[in-house]
Length: 95
Image (cartoon, rainbow, N blue to C red):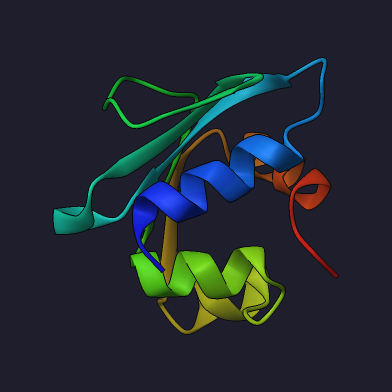
C-alpha cells in the first residue's frame, strides 16, 4: 500500500485529542509519516520516537498482520528515542 494511503488510514484512526508524544515512521526511500498531536504529516521532522520500518511492514503492522514485538525481534522494525511513545500506537492498531 502506498504511504499516502497508509497516512489517510492513520489519520482516520487518530484520537480526537491527539497523541501526547510524536512518532515518526521512517520508511526509507518511500518516505516518512509523522504522527504529532492529531495530525499525520509527510514532512520529516524531529520526533520523540522513530520507528524504522518498510512501507509494506508498516501496512501489515497497522492491519494487525505483524505483531510489534515479533517485528522488533525479527528486525522488521527498529525503535529509537522514547520507546514508551510507541506504546501509544496500540490505539491505532487493529487487533
